[in-house]
Image (cartoon, rainbow, N blue to C red):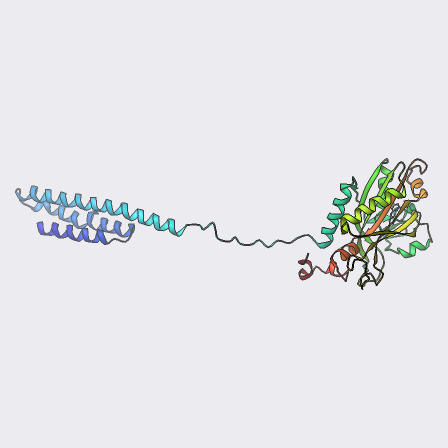
Length: 339
Ligand code: 2NL
């Protein structure tokens, strides 16, 4: 029995030493100290021993059990520690690794330019006004001094919903509504989508975007118009750009003018974009016609004002050197990602 205990002890210490993880260690414990364990069965055999042998073997068995339990406890501690260290090593996060890039879109080139234009006018105290794209014929034409059968109505031929309702051809109706509903001073810009029954080509689209502006106050003169638009053009295209006011005619303004800028492509030398002239037309403007003021209930003897209008597509094409208006609407990512 003594030899058996000795053998159990040696075998136990050896396997404890070689245990690779906590699970193996637990199996060893069960095999030796468990209910059906080797040492347990030896202790059960104690009852067959003589009175003299019993205390000697008993003491030895106790020593062997205590020793095995102690070694098991030690091994458990060091294996648990090893296991934790291994886990920590595996789960370590390298905060210096490059992050996964988030693929994000960006503003459409026309929105970039629109935001710039809004910023410039807001900086001069203008507010942004909006209104319906489906308009009464009255607001789109008549209130702007374009009577039935006026040739300008051909120029701006549009899509009719019925005899009295049209898709607006400019954002002026927004400004008419503002004048009807508020008192001067008025300083607004009205950006938005407009419609004309034009054939599609490199510079025309039946649906496009316009930005109009309106200022109404006492003693507003053509000098205010020139000053405001010169500041606008220089902020948009740079200080070096030259600005030219050329007489023109619109039914809703008198006097009227078109504004040319020195060609943003060639600087005025003459090129394909400016057709050799060195100048590019970018907007129309004028002093609001007294008849228009009368129709909205503003007294033209007390108040005067100026208005202007420009095409957003055209301004954007000039800014970036875009040659075909259709590129704006096709939503080809290869085009859009360039801005
Ligand atoms: C152009 C020219 C223009 C206006 C728009 C306007 C609006 C009101 C009263 C008077 Cl409510 N005028 N708008 C004036 C002059 C020119 O647009 O070439 N647009 C693309």
